[in-house]
Length: 204
Image 1 (cartoon, rainbow, N blue to C red):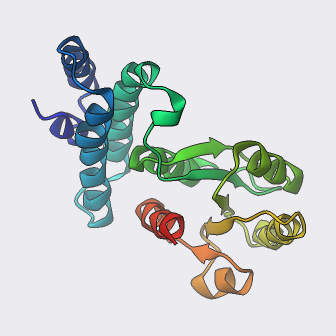
Image 2 (cartoon, rainbow, N blue to C red; image 1 turned 90 degrees about the vertical axis):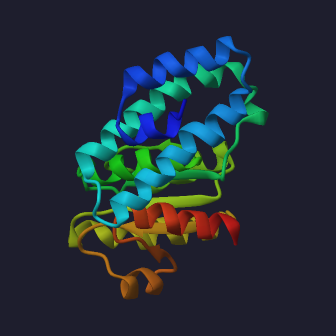
């Protein structure tokens, strides 16, 4: 059975049935994740990036993958869970937009990152507390308004002042690569770009 194809098709029931069958047959949960769920989601990410799949299909695929993960996760010790790194993410203070951020969160989790989602209207203190608590590698920030995007600089400055060893990934309609570089962050234009960039940051 090809779990990856069930993911690509967004077939949640197919995933649930077949993951349970694999577990009953004593399949290694880590192999189920890496060779089945994540490999399928990687294809989804590529298709989304190339315009061959669209947001509703990606969300269905992510739901299917999460259904599989919910079955497999309890069988794996936290220390053995495959992860590319930990990302703390939030829409910045004063900004209540979350559709884009939520898609990024789903895509990052699907790619194998541990994601701590702080939601919307997130203040400096919340970012700092979450980075410390989760020993995060990357801080992800989203802003959809020119009036709120300037708050990203405050968050970065505060993290630097705290001596936190993290990298910064930013996105949102008013941002640009030039502005992002100026504040010391890396820009991602969309959800699949955020995943690619996060992978590069985690590997650096």
